[in-house]
Image 1: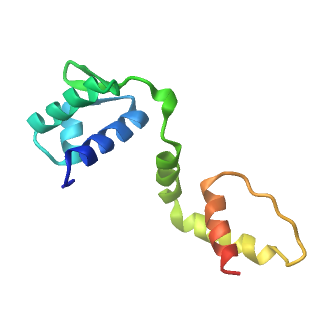
Image 2: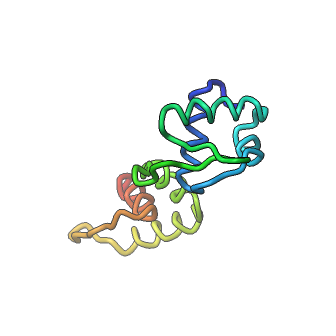
Image 3: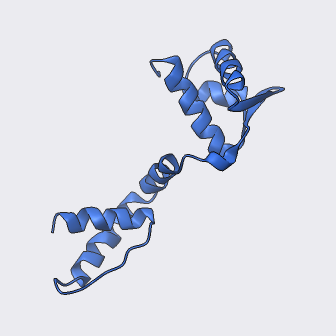
Length: 118
């Protein structure tokens, strides 16, 4: 269970930024608190202008301000073993005298980590 109301609300907002809309029962499952507690959190988040309560659920109001670091962390964890394997193979192909360019992908983060230990 999340320890504070702010932690619960942050988790709700971050998930809504990804899903756009969620039902109350799904939010209850997400934060592992009662339906009444989730509804109180949604009332507070609506007052702050972050979400809009709907019949049986809630939706994010402005998804343009998406939390990219949060999404990057989620992406980073998907296919982690493959990304580590790719980073190890890429490391074996890089020589000391080479210049390399990396994109902003989550796979590149693994390569950066491997190269920093080089």
